[in-house]
Amino acid sequence: MSREVDFDIAIVGCGSAGTAAALAAAEKAKEGNEDLKIVILERADFDNRGGNSRWTASYMRMEDIDTPAPNFVEDMLSFSENFADRAYIETLHENAGPTLRWVESKGVEFDYLPTMFLTASKPRLLPVGGGRALIDTLSLRARALGVEIIYEATVWDLGLNDDGAVDHLRVRIEGGESIRLNVNSVIFASGGFQGSHEMMAKYIGRDAHKIPTVAEGGLYNKGEAISMMLRVGAKGGGQWDSFHAEPVDPRSNREEAGVMTYPYAILVNQNGERFTDEGETTIDEQYEAVARKIFYECPNHIVYMITDQKLYDIPDYEEALQTEQPPITADTIEELAEKLSIRPEALAKTVAEFNAAVQPGEFIHNKKDGKKAIGINPPKSNWAITIDQGPFIAYPVICCNVFTNGGIATDTEGRVVSNDNQPIPGLYAAGEMTGLYYGKYPGGTSVLRGLVFGKRAGENAVEYVAQATKMLT
Image (cartoon, rainbow, N blue to C red; front, side, top):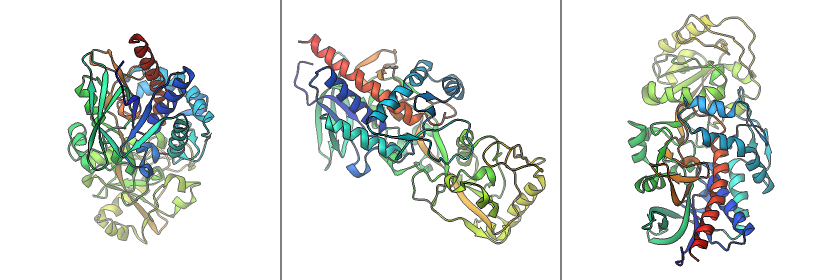
């Protein structure tokens, strides 16, 4: 580390994890009177920076800004069937409140804004302005402390020295030229691999290229950094053959065009048949499983939400219907079926059987009401209301990829670990490129962990560089 370097710390990625890492590193260096050169390398241009973070509402699984939701650790472990790293989750739980207070101190406001979940088992705190507010605020603060940001720069190679410590990056810049940056430490925060058809096919499987990203920011997440770290012996983590799924309107050009009103309707496949219990539980606890069924079990990976004019009587239904596209409507179920390329007699039979199965009881839109449809397969456990008030309504629904689950393993300090569970000197990672999730995604934890472990990685990278430099001087 006595050699000349281009940058002491390079952060790859300008999303919530990357900007948190950069700002935390700059603050830590200033606090310790360390004159360090810090840079963010971002593949996109300024207007598209930030990957997934730029487009997300950034729901956070918090009771309030200081308090994680009840059973935070237990839920995360249970959802993963205890495959997730307990120490990592406990660290997330312990640092969630203090980290959000740190973010708040930089100028980001938090509030309980309306969400697309009209029924929810856990609270959701949101930054006012969503993920874009996080990126804009944290990056501006980092720039004020001297952090450089280089746009349209794609890192394609990671080099270690003879001692196995981080040594350099190779970066392809606009125009195709490749340059070498000598660095003392790298923090990778460049997202998953949902933007790579090759990696999606390799890890997710057949037809994975047909799963669109939840927002165009995900297309920048091509997984090179994950592959680079695996090549130098980093350990993998998370469920590689899975991803966080969400049901969306395929016609929409909006980010996260969620169709979360289906619990008050029925979902039918291209054969006009129901295939799931639309009212099994609160929407925040079921939408991912339903989205997976759409992709893995339904013909052509598409289904249709079928309902009627009673949809418009549901308070705040607009919040749960994030598409800007209008519904497909018809005066009769048979006419609606023809517009959907479904056999009219099949859809009419499904709707008639569902209506006959609906049980009496009070409909309550914002909590499990026990209003069932029984004697049909599958049954409906809540919010079963007849579809009989035309004009009838349909929305197409497909599965989208919010982020991939497989990634790089880190310790609780954000250090990338080898397959021998030893930290790779100078190498850190945070955010969606780090592997944590298995099975069911615990909603409202992704951006939160990006902030928490981005901040920790930034602070610890400064300590690593400072200590290593002192040993050589």
